[in-house]
Length: 445
Image (cartoon, rainbow, N blue to C red; front, top):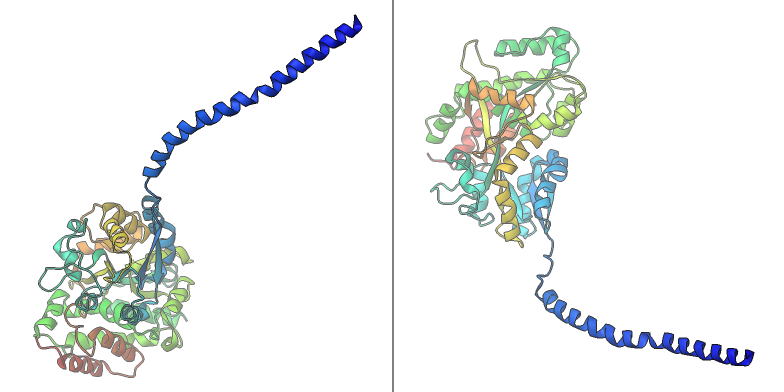
């Protein structure tokens, strides 16, 4: 019996082993049958899928090196979030070097896809040479009025070649704590301004923070800041273009006279002080008054160790009308030689949008949008600058439209002579004569 039971057990075990070993065989033959149709149905779908868009990098040329972190941390990420296939690189040059560097790159075919545009003649020259593409039909250009586009349009009005971004307003920043220490109120007249300078100097302070090493500050932050009060803004600027006004007129000589009289109140060794140096001196509390404009707000608010105030350009006498340089300052255009024109146009269309206007105005307070977008400014100092439009007449820098198209270049010459006046190597009268003589060599109204 035991042998029979053992035999039966062996037979049962053998049967179980055969069954177990036989199970995978049907599964093996069925699995491919089940998978093949699935693969066959998925293959056509995969074949019709569009390939992932290749990421393209576009580069922006600019003179706004102060804004690098804002572009990298706020503006570019907002665009790239909506356009993941387009990478944007902001590649600024030093302000004083920008024109020369940009022209060299354009001539050599190495410039970026997008060109930050200075207003009027400098950018018009680039368009006339074929370096900037026409943007007249760019989607979004309808968001700008004629005044906004006037700095970046051909004389016949047929071609707009840059998307307007912002204007800036000139004026003076000052150290409120230092003013309070000496009991100085915001000066409104020329006499009050120079009285404040004397009080500060007598107290051992650097009254005006400015250097002349880079030259352009002397003209842009000095001459073009206070000058409109003397030449009556647009009245004087248009008279120069018409030929009824001359740089040898009393208004211009007086402007350079003021700059000459600023010199004793500048930092020691100011002839060697560069733009970044003067910015640092001011934010470190090493000086009282900084002649400049609204474009400094972001950096000064970030870096200043004291309470900041601003005041508009002083007038000659109490009760005189005030004038501010409310300058159409910055736009952005398409390099006609860009290897990625469609992606660059996508970026430019975004720049023309309400979204960009709101982002830019608050990311860079003091750059006031030129589009028709309704923008609320969060920054109190930016709002104070903007409020001057209600009480003062606005103008633009007088060298930018038409008058800087020839050689010697008026804008560059104003840099040179204004610095020379402040360095006391030219008299105001000599500066005026040199500028007018240079203009007469090529400009015939």
